[in-house]
Length: 89
Image (cartoon, rainbow, N blue to C red; front, side):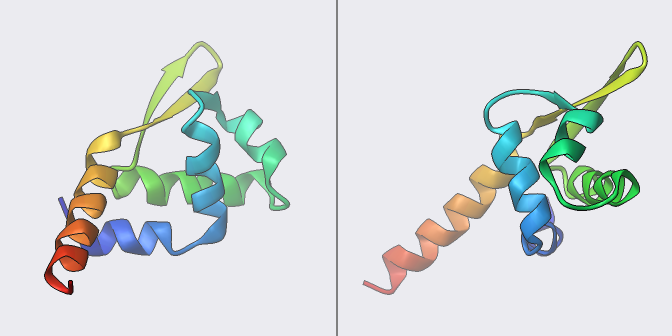
């Protein structure tokens, strides 16, 4: 798991908004595009960055692509942050 790639993906506010929405359950690309003030191709690019970082998984069902959060990379970030905070006390 590449923490640097995860942090790069999390650095963008649109990608964080996508993850926030997906924390409530899977959504299609179209549903996610409705949430953001960017073009659908831009949303697709954000989804690719999130997928490349391992933060989401995508499944094709019929005509729609469904996306969902993958917990493991976020757990790794939380463990890293916890480790930092426990050392600095």
